[in-house]
Length: 316
Ligand SMILES: O=C1O[C@H](COP(=O)(O)O)[C@@H](O)[C@H](O)[C@H]1O
Image 1 (spheres, rainbow, N blue to C red):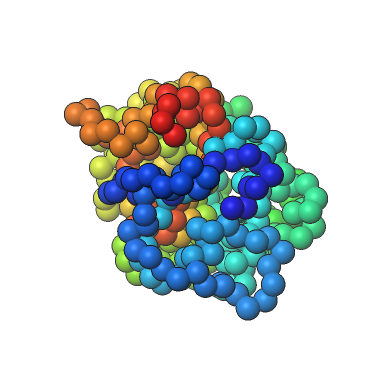
Image 2: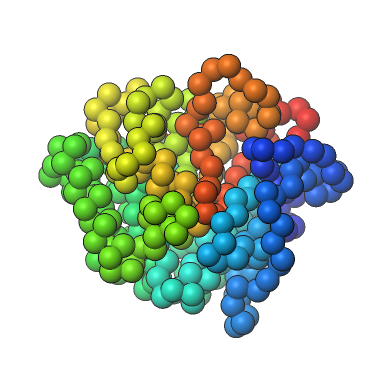
Protein backbone atom coordinates (compact mmCIF):
# COMPACT_ATOMS: atom_id res chain seq x y z
CA UNK A 1 0.00 0.00 0.00
CA UNK A 2 1.36 3.38 -0.94
CA UNK A 3 0.23 5.01 2.30
CA UNK A 4 2.04 2.91 4.85
CA UNK A 5 2.92 5.96 6.93
CA UNK A 6 -0.60 7.26 6.76
CA UNK A 7 -2.19 4.75 9.09
CA UNK A 8 -4.68 4.29 6.31
CA UNK A 9 -6.87 1.28 5.85
CA UNK A 10 -6.90 -0.10 2.34
CA UNK A 11 -9.98 -1.86 1.13
CA UNK A 12 -10.78 -3.24 -2.28
CA UNK A 13 -14.40 -2.83 -3.20
CA UNK A 14 -16.72 -4.20 -5.77
CA UNK A 15 -20.39 -3.43 -5.92
CA UNK A 16 -21.14 -6.94 -7.08
CA UNK A 17 -19.59 -9.06 -4.31
CA UNK A 18 -18.72 -8.36 -0.70
CA UNK A 19 -16.86 -10.73 1.61
CA UNK A 20 -14.39 -10.42 4.49
CA UNK A 21 -10.73 -11.30 4.71
CA UNK A 22 -7.88 -10.50 7.10
CA UNK A 23 -8.22 -7.39 9.28
CA UNK A 24 -4.89 -6.01 8.06
CA UNK A 25 -5.78 -5.75 4.40
CA UNK A 26 -9.53 -5.72 5.01
CA UNK A 27 -10.48 -6.81 1.57
CA UNK A 28 -14.22 -6.49 1.28
CA UNK A 29 -14.52 -7.84 -2.18
CA UNK A 30 -12.56 -9.55 -4.85
CA UNK A 31 -11.91 -7.74 -8.10
CA UNK A 32 -14.24 -8.79 -10.88
CA UNK A 33 -11.27 -10.18 -12.77
CA UNK A 34 -7.90 -11.20 -11.46
CA UNK A 35 -5.10 -9.73 -13.49
CA UNK A 36 -1.44 -10.51 -12.90
CA UNK A 37 0.65 -7.78 -11.30
CA UNK A 38 2.73 -6.37 -14.10
CA UNK A 39 5.08 -3.40 -14.32
CA UNK A 40 3.66 -0.68 -16.54
CA UNK A 41 6.98 0.67 -17.66
CA UNK A 42 10.45 -0.83 -17.79
CA UNK A 43 12.05 2.37 -16.51
CA UNK A 44 12.15 2.91 -12.74
CA UNK A 45 9.39 5.14 -11.44
CA UNK A 46 10.00 8.09 -9.14
CA UNK A 47 6.43 7.76 -7.89
CA UNK A 48 5.66 4.12 -7.12
CA UNK A 49 2.03 3.39 -7.81
CA UNK A 50 -0.06 1.51 -5.29
CA UNK A 51 -1.22 -2.07 -5.80
CA UNK A 52 -4.37 -1.20 -7.74
CA UNK A 53 -2.52 0.78 -10.36
CA UNK A 54 0.29 -1.73 -10.55
CA UNK A 55 -2.22 -4.42 -11.44
CA UNK A 56 -3.81 -2.49 -14.26
CA UNK A 57 -3.37 -3.77 -17.73
CA UNK A 58 -3.82 -1.06 -20.35
CA UNK A 59 -6.48 -1.94 -22.89
CA UNK A 60 -8.15 -4.61 -20.80
CA UNK A 61 -11.54 -3.94 -19.34
CA UNK A 62 -11.35 -4.36 -15.60
CA UNK A 63 -13.19 -2.50 -12.91
CA UNK A 64 -11.49 -2.16 -9.55
CA UNK A 65 -12.27 -0.11 -6.50
CA UNK A 66 -10.05 0.66 -3.58
CA UNK A 67 -10.86 2.48 -0.36
CA UNK A 68 -8.25 4.43 1.59
CA UNK A 69 -9.20 5.79 5.02
CA UNK A 70 -6.84 8.33 6.60
CA UNK A 71 -6.46 9.51 10.19
CA UNK A 72 -4.98 12.82 9.17
CA UNK A 73 -5.79 15.19 6.31
CA UNK A 74 -2.04 15.72 5.77
CA UNK A 75 -1.64 12.04 5.01
CA UNK A 76 -4.61 12.01 2.67
CA UNK A 77 -3.14 14.96 0.77
CA UNK A 78 0.27 13.26 0.61
CA UNK A 79 -1.26 10.06 -0.75
CA UNK A 80 -3.39 11.92 -3.29
CA UNK A 81 -0.28 13.77 -4.51
CA UNK A 82 1.67 10.54 -4.82
CA UNK A 83 -1.21 8.84 -6.66
CA UNK A 84 -1.60 11.74 -9.09
CA UNK A 85 2.14 12.15 -9.70
CA UNK A 86 2.50 8.40 -10.32
CA UNK A 87 -0.28 8.45 -12.90
CA UNK A 88 1.17 11.58 -14.50
CA UNK A 89 4.48 9.77 -14.95
CA UNK A 90 2.81 6.61 -16.26
CA UNK A 91 0.64 8.32 -18.87
CA UNK A 92 3.34 10.78 -19.95
CA UNK A 93 5.60 7.77 -20.63
CA UNK A 94 2.89 5.69 -22.30
CA UNK A 95 1.18 8.23 -24.49
CA UNK A 96 3.02 11.54 -24.14
CA UNK A 97 0.17 13.34 -22.40
CA UNK A 98 -1.62 13.30 -19.06
CA UNK A 99 -5.28 14.29 -19.39
CA UNK A 100 -6.51 15.10 -15.91
CA UNK A 101 -9.90 16.33 -14.81
CA UNK A 102 -10.34 18.56 -11.76
CA UNK A 103 -13.45 19.23 -9.71
CA UNK A 104 -14.16 22.19 -7.47
CA UNK A 105 -14.78 22.23 -3.73
CA UNK A 106 -12.55 20.72 -1.08
CA UNK A 107 -10.57 18.67 -3.60
CA UNK A 108 -8.41 21.61 -4.63
CA UNK A 109 -6.94 22.14 -1.17
CA UNK A 110 -6.18 18.42 -0.98
CA UNK A 111 -4.06 18.73 -4.16
CA UNK A 112 -1.75 21.31 -2.59
CA UNK A 113 1.17 18.93 -2.06
CA UNK A 114 1.60 18.53 -5.81
CA UNK A 115 2.78 22.13 -5.88
CA UNK A 116 5.48 21.40 -3.27
CA UNK A 117 8.73 19.42 -3.35
CA UNK A 118 9.39 16.77 -4.50
CA UNK A 119 6.52 16.91 -6.99
CA UNK A 120 6.90 20.52 -8.05
CA UNK A 121 10.26 19.82 -9.70
CA UNK A 122 9.88 16.12 -10.48
CA UNK A 123 6.51 16.06 -12.29
CA UNK A 124 6.66 16.71 -16.03
CA UNK A 125 4.05 19.46 -16.01
CA UNK A 126 4.49 20.05 -19.74
CA UNK A 127 2.51 16.83 -20.34
CA UNK A 128 -0.51 17.91 -18.33
CA UNK A 129 -3.81 18.76 -20.00
CA UNK A 130 -6.32 20.03 -17.47
CA UNK A 131 -10.12 19.85 -17.71
CA UNK A 132 -13.01 20.40 -15.33
CA UNK A 133 -15.58 17.77 -14.38
CA UNK A 134 -17.96 20.63 -13.75
CA UNK A 135 -17.98 24.38 -13.81
CA UNK A 136 -20.31 27.05 -12.58
CA UNK A 137 -21.60 29.42 -15.29
CA UNK A 138 -20.00 32.54 -13.84
CA UNK A 139 -17.07 34.68 -14.98
CA UNK A 140 -13.66 33.08 -14.48
CA UNK A 141 -12.76 35.64 -11.82
CA UNK A 142 -15.98 35.08 -9.83
CA UNK A 143 -15.70 33.66 -6.31
CA UNK A 144 -17.93 30.71 -7.36
CA UNK A 145 -15.77 29.73 -10.34
CA UNK A 146 -14.17 26.30 -10.14
CA UNK A 147 -11.50 27.60 -12.55
CA UNK A 148 -10.63 30.43 -10.16
CA UNK A 149 -10.53 28.04 -7.21
CA UNK A 150 -8.16 25.69 -9.02
CA UNK A 151 -6.05 28.53 -10.43
CA UNK A 152 -5.62 30.23 -7.05
CA UNK A 153 -5.09 27.04 -5.05
CA UNK A 154 -3.09 24.87 -7.44
CA UNK A 155 -2.65 25.69 -11.13
CA UNK A 156 -0.95 29.07 -10.65
CA UNK A 157 1.75 27.29 -8.62
CA UNK A 158 2.78 24.70 -11.21
CA UNK A 159 4.21 25.24 -14.73
CA UNK A 160 1.45 23.74 -16.90
CA UNK A 161 1.40 25.42 -20.33
CA UNK A 162 -1.53 27.87 -20.34
CA UNK A 163 -2.89 26.51 -23.63
CA UNK A 164 -3.25 23.08 -22.00
CA UNK A 165 -5.66 24.33 -19.37
CA UNK A 166 -9.15 23.98 -20.84
CA UNK A 167 -11.44 26.36 -19.02
CA UNK A 168 -15.12 26.77 -19.78
CA UNK A 169 -15.98 29.67 -22.12
CA UNK A 170 -17.48 32.08 -19.60
CA UNK A 171 -19.05 34.34 -22.22
CA UNK A 172 -21.76 31.80 -23.14
CA UNK A 173 -25.04 30.61 -21.67
CA UNK A 174 -25.05 27.32 -19.75
CA UNK A 175 -26.33 25.47 -22.82
CA UNK A 176 -23.82 27.20 -25.10
CA UNK A 177 -20.90 26.63 -22.72
CA UNK A 178 -21.72 22.91 -22.45
CA UNK A 179 -21.91 22.56 -26.26
CA UNK A 180 -18.67 24.52 -26.66
CA UNK A 181 -16.81 22.40 -24.09
CA UNK A 182 -18.07 19.23 -25.75
CA UNK A 183 -16.95 20.43 -29.21
CA UNK A 184 -13.48 21.26 -27.88
CA UNK A 185 -13.31 17.85 -26.26
CA UNK A 186 -14.13 16.11 -29.56
CA UNK A 187 -11.30 18.09 -31.17
CA UNK A 188 -8.84 17.03 -28.46
CA UNK A 189 -9.87 13.40 -28.90
CA UNK A 190 -9.15 13.79 -32.62
CA UNK A 191 -5.72 15.26 -31.79
CA UNK A 192 -4.95 12.39 -29.42
CA UNK A 193 -4.68 14.64 -26.36
CA UNK A 194 -7.58 12.72 -24.81
CA UNK A 195 -7.88 8.97 -25.41
CA UNK A 196 -11.05 7.15 -26.43
CA UNK A 197 -12.29 4.14 -24.50
CA UNK A 198 -12.50 1.08 -26.74
CA UNK A 199 -14.97 -0.31 -24.24
CA UNK A 200 -17.48 2.55 -24.06
CA UNK A 201 -16.66 4.73 -27.08
CA UNK A 202 -16.53 7.75 -24.77
CA UNK A 203 -13.45 9.84 -23.92
CA UNK A 204 -11.13 8.09 -21.54
CA UNK A 205 -9.45 10.61 -19.27
CA UNK A 206 -6.28 9.42 -17.59
CA UNK A 207 -7.37 10.68 -14.18
CA UNK A 208 -10.74 12.05 -13.07
CA UNK A 209 -10.43 13.80 -9.69
CA UNK A 210 -13.84 14.02 -8.05
CA UNK A 211 -15.26 15.35 -4.82
CA UNK A 212 -18.68 14.55 -3.35
CA UNK A 213 -21.23 16.85 -1.74
CA UNK A 214 -23.07 15.89 1.47
CA UNK A 215 -26.11 15.02 -0.68
CA UNK A 216 -24.07 12.51 -2.69
CA UNK A 217 -23.63 14.73 -5.76
CA UNK A 218 -20.49 14.49 -7.82
CA UNK A 219 -19.43 17.06 -10.45
CA UNK A 220 -22.74 18.91 -11.02
CA UNK A 221 -24.79 15.72 -11.16
CA UNK A 222 -27.30 16.11 -8.34
CA UNK A 223 -29.61 13.50 -6.78
CA UNK A 224 -32.91 13.17 -8.61
CA UNK A 225 -31.96 15.50 -11.47
CA UNK A 226 -32.76 14.09 -14.93
CA UNK A 227 -29.28 14.81 -16.31
CA UNK A 228 -27.88 11.96 -14.24
CA UNK A 229 -29.42 9.72 -16.92
CA UNK A 230 -27.82 11.51 -19.88
CA UNK A 231 -26.18 8.82 -21.97
CA UNK A 232 -25.34 10.49 -25.29
CA UNK A 233 -23.72 13.82 -24.57
CA UNK A 234 -20.23 14.28 -23.13
CA UNK A 235 -21.08 17.56 -21.44
CA UNK A 236 -24.47 18.81 -20.30
CA UNK A 237 -25.82 21.62 -18.16
CA UNK A 238 -28.23 22.50 -15.35
CA UNK A 239 -29.99 25.77 -14.72
CA UNK A 240 -31.61 24.70 -11.46
CA UNK A 241 -28.79 23.27 -9.36
CA UNK A 242 -30.00 22.80 -5.76
CA UNK A 243 -26.60 24.09 -4.63
CA UNK A 244 -25.83 27.64 -5.71
CA UNK A 245 -24.97 28.90 -8.21
CA UNK A 246 -27.87 27.37 -10.18
CA UNK A 247 -26.29 27.39 -13.65
CA UNK A 248 -23.54 24.86 -14.23
CA UNK A 249 -22.04 22.62 -16.88
CA UNK A 250 -20.91 19.08 -16.11
CA UNK A 251 -19.40 15.97 -17.61
CA UNK A 252 -21.95 13.20 -17.93
CA UNK A 253 -21.78 9.76 -16.34
CA UNK A 254 -20.63 7.98 -19.53
CA UNK A 255 -17.57 10.26 -19.57
CA UNK A 256 -16.88 9.96 -15.84
CA UNK A 257 -17.25 6.19 -15.90
CA UNK A 258 -14.99 5.78 -18.96
CA UNK A 259 -11.98 7.22 -17.11
CA UNK A 260 -8.84 5.15 -16.74
CA UNK A 261 -8.58 6.23 -13.10
CA UNK A 262 -11.09 7.91 -10.81
CA UNK A 263 -9.94 9.40 -7.50
CA UNK A 264 -12.88 10.31 -5.28
CA UNK A 265 -12.01 12.51 -2.30
CA UNK A 266 -14.61 12.47 0.45
CA UNK A 267 -13.91 13.81 3.92
CA UNK A 268 -15.88 14.99 6.93
CA UNK A 269 -18.79 13.80 9.05
CA UNK A 270 -21.23 15.77 6.91
CA UNK A 271 -20.69 13.23 4.15
CA UNK A 272 -21.04 10.12 6.31
CA UNK A 273 -24.68 9.49 5.32
CA UNK A 274 -23.98 9.40 1.58
CA UNK A 275 -20.84 7.33 2.16
CA UNK A 276 -22.85 4.86 4.25
CA UNK A 277 -25.56 4.54 1.59
CA UNK A 278 -22.89 3.94 -1.05
CA UNK A 279 -20.57 1.56 0.77
CA UNK A 280 -22.78 -0.32 3.22
CA UNK A 281 -23.75 -2.82 0.55
CA UNK A 282 -27.36 -2.68 1.72
CA UNK A 283 -30.01 -2.70 -0.96
CA UNK A 284 -31.94 0.53 -0.84
CA UNK A 285 -35.38 1.20 -2.20
CA UNK A 286 -34.58 4.84 -2.82
CA UNK A 287 -32.98 6.11 -6.01
CA UNK A 288 -29.27 5.77 -6.38
CA UNK A 289 -27.27 8.78 -5.34
CA UNK A 290 -24.98 10.12 -8.07
CA UNK A 291 -21.95 8.91 -6.09
CA UNK A 292 -23.43 5.40 -6.23
CA UNK A 293 -23.50 5.68 -10.01
CA UNK A 294 -19.73 6.13 -10.26
CA UNK A 295 -18.80 2.80 -11.77
CA UNK A 296 -15.64 2.66 -13.87
CA UNK A 297 -16.30 0.66 -17.04
CA UNK A 298 -12.75 0.61 -18.28
CA UNK A 299 -10.62 1.61 -15.33
CA UNK A 300 -10.03 1.85 -11.62
CA UNK A 301 -11.36 3.89 -8.75
CA UNK A 302 -9.77 4.93 -5.46
CA UNK A 303 -11.67 6.53 -2.59
CA UNK A 304 -9.59 8.92 -0.47
CA UNK A 305 -11.55 9.25 2.77
CA UNK A 306 -11.18 10.00 6.46
CA UNK A 307 -12.66 8.47 9.60
CA UNK A 308 -15.45 11.06 10.06
CA UNK A 309 -16.68 10.33 6.52
CA UNK A 310 -16.66 6.62 7.34
CA UNK A 311 -18.21 7.05 10.79
CA UNK A 312 -21.61 5.54 9.95
CA UNK A 313 -19.96 2.39 8.65
CA UNK A 314 -19.25 0.83 12.02
CA UNK A 315 -18.20 -2.48 10.48
CA UNK A 316 -15.44 -1.08 8.25
O1 LIG B 1 -20.50 22.20 -6.13
C1 LIG B 1 -19.59 21.40 -6.13
O2 LIG B 1 -19.46 20.52 -5.09
C2 LIG B 1 -18.70 19.31 -5.20
C3 LIG B 1 -18.35 18.87 -3.80
O3 LIG B 1 -17.66 19.92 -3.14
P1 LIG B 1 -17.04 19.72 -1.69
O4 LIG B 1 -16.55 21.10 -1.28
O5 LIG B 1 -18.13 19.23 -0.79
O6 LIG B 1 -15.91 18.76 -1.79
C4 LIG B 1 -17.50 19.49 -6.10
O7 LIG B 1 -16.86 18.26 -6.30
C5 LIG B 1 -17.96 20.10 -7.41
O8 LIG B 1 -16.89 20.21 -8.34
C6 LIG B 1 -18.51 21.45 -7.13
O9 LIG B 1 -18.93 22.17 -8.30
